[in-house]
Length: 88
Image 1 (spheres, rainbow, N blue to C red):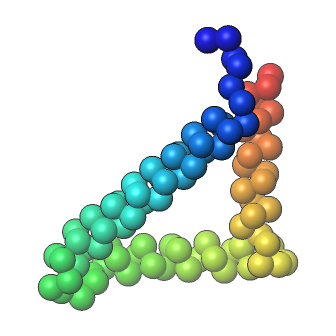
Image 2 (tube, rainbow, N blue to C red):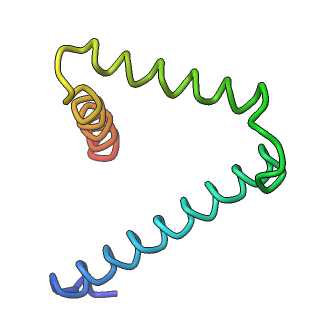
């Protein structure tokens, strides 16, 4: 490996990563829905209600940061921390 990759190859790889992550997350969502509702046969139970409550609490916490941009701000903070750890 001589490190001679062009931007075209980088963007192509990023596109494949995006497609793979999207497909994986959709498959995971389908499997979670199937396991929590027995493929739509029953209404959601206590576990699903707890998952919804946690998701709502996170959303409210981000809104409490002052702007709807609370989640992106949190993500940037996470990325900067990761880059700092990688660079050191």
